[in-house]
Image 1 (cartoon, rainbow, N blue to C red):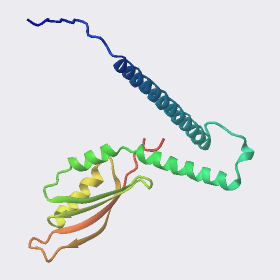
Image 2: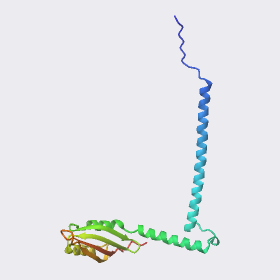
Image 3: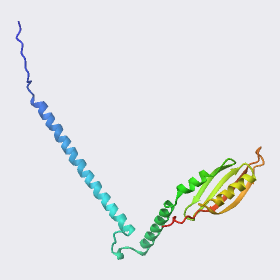
Image 4: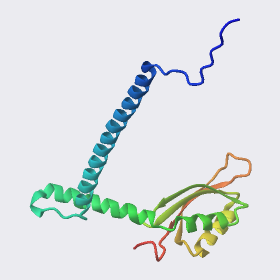
Length: 180
């Protein structure tokens, strides 16, 4: 009979222990390198934020560092930002809800072109006939969101069987709380 050896705790070779230590060291070095990269990115972003805030005037710099051309450019950028802010503060949802809420059995909206800067909206639509177009015009005038509704042009589509009317309207879209 052969001798049976039971080994409940196998011997670890020095090679596998050193391999584990090497892998751990590589992971530690990679983590340190990534951390330094993130710190550098954060510092760059902080510098960019500081420059942007100075440009917006939140952190005043010495007035002598801006040339007249840079000052004009900064003023133009601030005016553009105010314009965008005014456009975003308009009550778009109320305008869309009003237009969607109108009975549109005989009228189909084709395009809606709002100009928030001027406080106007242009509506292109197609009506079944002239009477439907005039009824739609009166409903827009009666709405609380639009005023000064004007018919810009209309064209009867004689080539189509039912002779629909394509038309363009313009309206003033000034709402009391639209401007800050």
